Amino acid sequence: MKKRLYKGWRPISVIVLFLIIWELSCFLFQIPKWILPAPTDIFREFVSGWSNYSGHLLSTIQLIIIGFAIGSTTGIAIAVLLHLNPILRQAFYPILIISQNIPMIVLAPILVIWFGFGLLPKIIVITLVCFFPITISLLDGFQQTNRDLILYMQMVGASKGQIFRKLEWPYALPFLFSGLKISATYSVMGAVISEWLGASKGIGVYMTLASSSFRTDRVFVAIMIIIVLSLCFFLLILLLEKKLIKWKPKEEGHVNETS
Image (cartoon, rainbow, N blue to C red; front, side, top):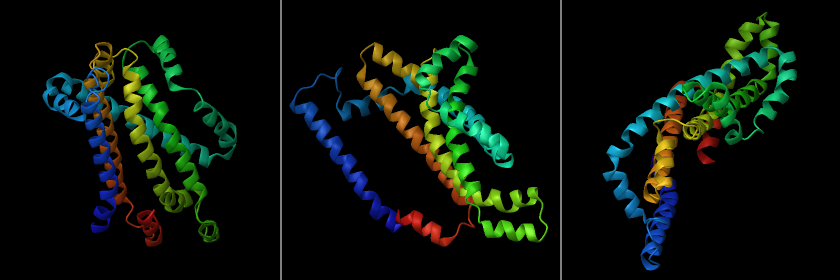
């Protein structure tokens, strides 16, 4: 804990210094608030404007949870399917890579044309954003399984299913959580993008309304909320990982702490 606090003061100091420079710059150069509000103005709006964005915040959180759950399940299912069937992996792995080269901001309007303005296109956007890091991380995890242990289990007569359940799956769990942590932050971004498609509620909608009315302070409030939500979801996955992967080798844990 002391080590973490010792390491944590450096980034906190940088952030505080950045905010001080920002505040002083706004004061000294008399920058209009509609162009760049000072951090204190943003904080005041954050506290006083709770009634304006609380409904939007709850709507976005619900969307993130639903989209992340579906995206994670889809990513895990695809990874397991491709790992257990090498022919499918050879056929679909390049398509997975190609699918990530299509910008989501381009694909999103097409989803609206196909599925309308309801919940479905928003869930699809978050799913497309979330599943890829999980699938790729999990496939890598399966590939990193100790070959000697696999050979040993084959020698003692273990079936392919037993090898998967008792060796490959536990071995790939740290890789799975790496993908989940990335997807948790991506899911917030995906939710905001999907709300730009034409939702009636959400932080994306709040941001759009604020920018169209030149309320730059509210735009920054929305950005702050997006950052806080991303950090919260990331920390939740981190805590879940610590609870579930207690068997992780000490050497690996030591590397993670020192990195």
